[in-house]
Length: 429
Image: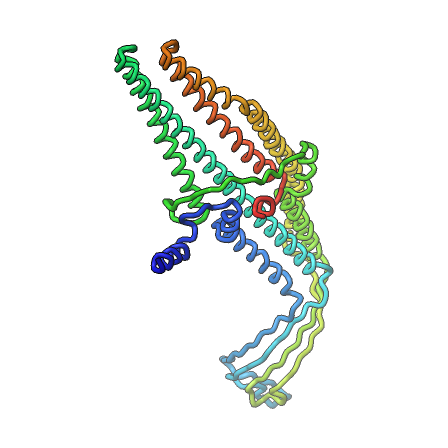
């Protein structure tokens, strides 16, 4: 007994997902931390963060160390009346260090920093959007698997119903009440039902593999989903959904950040027309016997101004303004697209809710109909076709009910996603 407990503990430790149910919350946590799309988005976000440091670098001193050797064809000399005297060696080494510091550039660098910060904000929002998309993909796949489980149960029950009808047909045939044809008909119908069971079983297996793929597991690992009790869409109106989407939609927020970044880019480019003030200093040592002071310090306060650069600055200004206009137009387009997505998801939710209401009593009626038809057949006042139709009707009604229920759950998640809601906080509690 002790050995069995140790073995069981090791199995649970090595394969924690085997032999127990996988909750939606557990799956979402795994997807949010290890999903491939999340890793890609985080890498892009890190690039944007480094771009902020790159944009900030002009405000910091630029320090260089240098060393060189000078080789001259002729030794430098100078004429003093009739005397010619050398002024330098024709071969010498020079060493030194220089430091340059930007003092003021009329907002060029600060605008570049702000533009990089808005780009970083856009990447952070994009990472959240990617996490939300990954969460939605997993939620939909999870509901698909739950639906496949229920459809497989329906297919299993249908096979049992047809097997029961076959036994009834065989008993009646043995009693000489019906012909062999009814037994053959029952056999054919049962075989067809078993085919549908295999299709349902394959669908369930495929959807389980989809879950494993999202969780980065082996595709054939067993998955046992649990029912989800969260229903976060209660009381949401279309107008409220639209308002929330316009305020929280990551697509709109990314464009807003992009517009602000482009505006700062334009400001930075405009500053290129204005002067740049700087301070430069350094130390130099020259191995030259003709130098009185081989060691020397220098300090320069200067100004640069762009008088003409071949039209490059004006071209960049024109490009930036065109891109800004395009971003603003795109934002308006995205707002309409987001509102359309929200309305589509909302109507899907309403339609699914109505389908659930319609199917509430249909299953009970179909079950009662099957009971009566089977009883009529056993008493000899009903036909085999009526029983078979009743079984088919019950299976169809049960399947439609489960599809409506999980269709509602999927539509609910889709509505929250289109509104910009954080699915991890809603479903991952």
